[in-house]
Image (cartoon, rainbow, N blue to C red; front, side):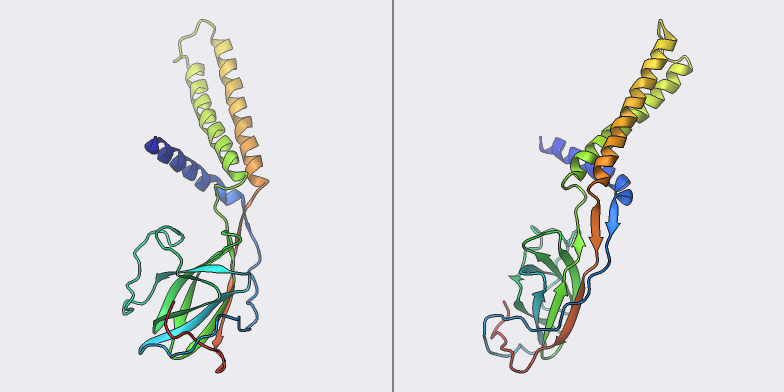
Length: 236
């Protein structure tokens, strides 16, 4: 049962790859958020030697922050995952606004809005001596197999498969390779079935196009933390 489900999902993903280019809508990139300091819980302390602190925040609301990768010298080995969006393989470290303490260098973080998981970004944040604030206006990256796109992909793929089969059968029937007592009637039935499959595929594409996949780039701003801003005694 699990194998059948995996094959079904794979087929849908292959179909999605073929039709996604015609149903994707690119929206204008978001503007960087204002360089204002959020209000985390007060704390005090200093970063460990060789580490910097950054207060991560999202202008869209609470967002889960996950550590994806960092420089080779980091004492936190970067996780090795093929899919940085996999929330099970790379769980969240904290929820914005929150402090992160990491070794000096650039680190890749994943931010996902809690209220809307399609609002998400992979961001590269530099960690340097001292403390800084990084705020992000999250982009939108929708999964293809969601909403009406899922049944639409199924219908489009089903119609396309049967249409190819119908065309192949029609060619063989017209060439006389399919034995039949009434070849013209067989050819007419084959053409009718092919036309029906084409109609199903077009209906599926119409359903997909009514719910386009949205892609939108986010934007961030990094600025030094004000001296009066409290920092935590240890990393979360």
